[in-house]
Length: 185
Figure 1 (cartoon, rainbow, N blue to C red):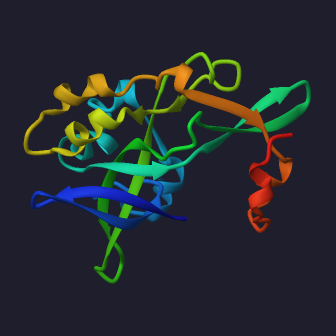
Figure 2 (cartoon, one colour):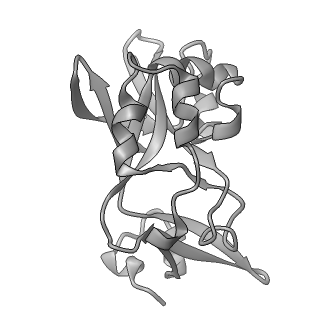
């Protein structure tokens, strides 16, 4: 799945489409990307798959919300999580470039996760690392910071700025697309 990604290069930000699921440059097969849609913030500096990207290839992944499934008895209920004001936000992400068999580059990305805030805790034990708007520039500025300088940006987003509500279970059906799926139940 292609997702929009914001990267910085030569002093300017630009939007690119990348495949979701990070494939490290050293990977032999692209299938590894299916297991790397998320990266735990706590282990980024030590994991070979993420260590170089943390130093050289950080990105923003814009979104207006995300889904997580809450278990209610034997039923998994999808929840839509977003900012209360409905505004866009940015997930902290990493990206890589992998050479395909024909030597063409494939750019891939992953979303960094962290511990949950009070909104997310009853829903899931992790949440995406959502950057505060004032921290986005620092996250992107590769030349101006070391990984240790930006690790403190990867914390739970303030719960008082977010909301979560139940949505239609059909969000689980990839071929079903309808804006009404975002309506609260």
